Length: 226
Image 1 (cartoon, rainbow, N blue to C red):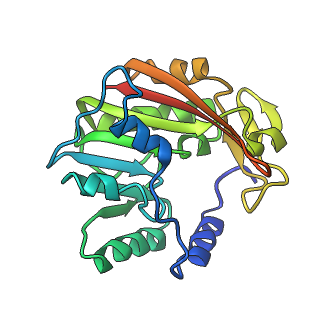
Image 2: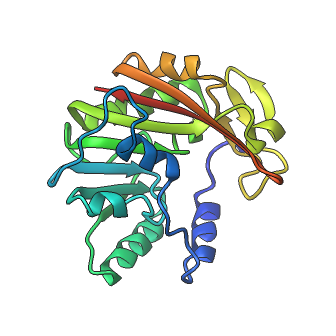
């Protein structure tokens, strides 16, 4: 199998749309932007442009809309984009979610002040695609703009069950509708830094590990400046 099955993702989102979709922003994104967890705290002001890569139903947008930020997103299927745009329109709010993916961001060069990528970058299945994806992220960022990457760490349940194929490539096994998909995992923050370095500077790294009863969660974090 290997590649992302877009139809399965579309079905996954369709099953959630009947009012039962995620409505709360990612906690780590909130901490990074609005807490005191980085050496250089981001400045979020009216009129800035933010992109959420793999935005889903846009649950990360609200804190930024409250600050007057223009919010954009990409998803891999048009119907997912349409649903997210509709959700915000029904609330009297405007966001711009377009069909795209890690290596194809449908925006002009240097457009964004911030890009957030929550559990999206690892959907690239090999090193050269990771490199192209990060080049594309850098392309649409302004000079001095920041990229916020959150990706799966080695103690996450999806990683622990995956089959190692070598060269940071893993096949998802016994997990959910993604079984058979090949992922690229960074294994540790040093590898995340390695792939960020060609296009970004001032890289700050972190990791969050949570030991829940039924599902251990583990995430690597990279914040980098173009």
